[in-house]
Image (cartoon, rainbow, N blue to C red; front, side, top):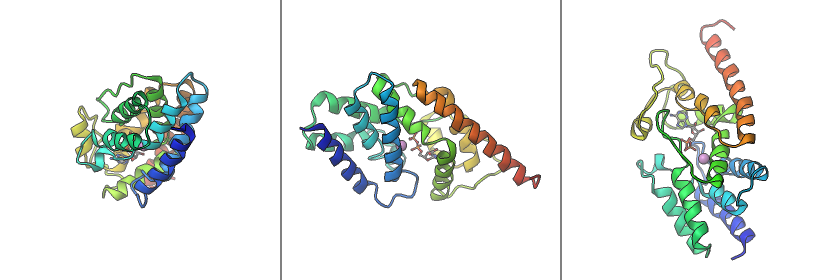
Length: 217
Ligand code: ADP
Ligand code: NI
């Protein structure tokens, strides 16, 4: 098994699997998370092979699109990694990261026991905030039939993954239920710094959004 050939093959595989996605989980989301994970990894003493594989395969089978099945992602990743003769310890580590990566609601802890996992989680979360995060939130909202904003429907701090997943709220609620909370959940030094900048950008965006809503600007 040559690590670089496995990375190259993972890129091709995930491009095929995610072809045609318009929910914000397309190949370019994977590309950005992969690049960011490599960048975050450069400042840490972490296993770059594990980080890259977990970043590339993390959305291989998202639970939101598999009826809430949290095991679909790790299972699909395991099948593929085993087909590439990746060593068992690496397969286990990558699959454990994929199984624990997802955000599951404001009130649900998503602990990540390894540094490699924290790097990939930070990279994935950075892609949910800032200019790209705003674009992805509205793309997902459109995909899921959500309103842009509903002043009569306040945000909810979901206490369980089930409640978070079944929420039908407007996309602006999602900023309060997830996006604005991510800054304080970052776990790497570089991730924290980038998240602070992207967070400030989103706050400015929301101020402008609400002012325009009322015809004030
Ligand atoms: P994670 O990578 O933490 O699992 P998701 O897969 O839940 O993130 O989300 C993918 C993208 O879709 C993110 O940018 C996220 O903010 C957005 N998204 C998820 N749920 C909603 C929602 N209810 N409304 C708007 N955007 C959403
Ligand atoms: Ni992702």
